[in-house]
Length: 257
Ligand SMILES: [Zn+2]
Ligand SMILES: [Zn+2]
Image 1 (cartoon, helix red, strand yellow):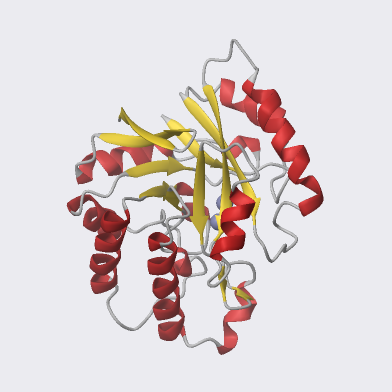
Image 2 (tube, rainbow, N blue to C red):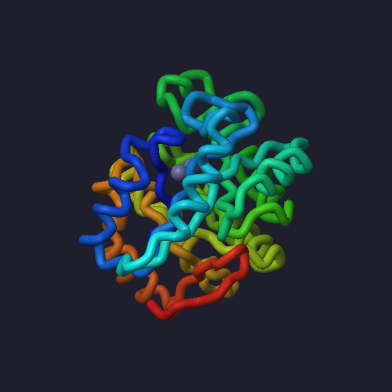
C-alpha cells in the first residue's frame, strides 16, 4: 500500500521528514509520499517561499537513503487558483516531484476549509456549485496528476439541499477525459463530516467511469500515516477496484490492491 498525502513541518504538519520515516517503518507501507502545501497565496499553512530550496534539498537528500523497507516519493499538494495556471506550472517546475496533487482550498479569496465559523453567511448551495466548477477546471488544467480530497466542501458538515449525484456523474466524466487520478483521502473520518473523501457514491461513480484511484491519509503528524487504510482498501475492493495508481517522476503506474 502507498500513502501519497503526508505533510511535514515544511508546511502545516507537526512532524519532520525523519519522524515520518521512523513511523512509516512500522506501517507496512510499500511507498510513502511527502506532499507539503505549495500555495501561491502563501497562507500560513503553506510552505514559505524562503523554504522552497530547503524542500528541494530534502527531496534530493532523502532520495539517497538506502535500506528502507519502503520507497520514498516526493510530491507537493498544489492549490488550484483560477487564472494563475502559468504561475502554478512554474512553481511545480521548481521541484523534482514524482507527482503533484491538485487541491482546492480557496473559492476566490475565501479559504473555505480552515475555519468553520466562516460559514455563517454562506449560501451552501452556491458554495457547492462554485466548488465543483473549480474542480472541473482544476481537473482539465493539465497541471496535476492527482486530485486531492475531491468532496472537501463537506468537511464541516454542511451539505446542499439538492442531490450531489448529478455532480458526481459530471465530475467523474471530466476526470476520465482529463486522464487524472483521484485520491481516497482518509482524513475526513476525523472531521465533522466523519466520512472519507470522497463519499461512497462518488467513488462508485468514478469507478464506473474507469477513473484510477490512489490513497492518502493527509497526515499532519507522523502517527496519522496510513490511518484507516484497512477500511479504505476494503471500501475500494467492495466497489470493484483491483489496483491503485502510483507515480515515479510523474509517470503513472499501478500496483495491485
Ligand atoms: Zn488539502
Ligand atoms: Zn493535505
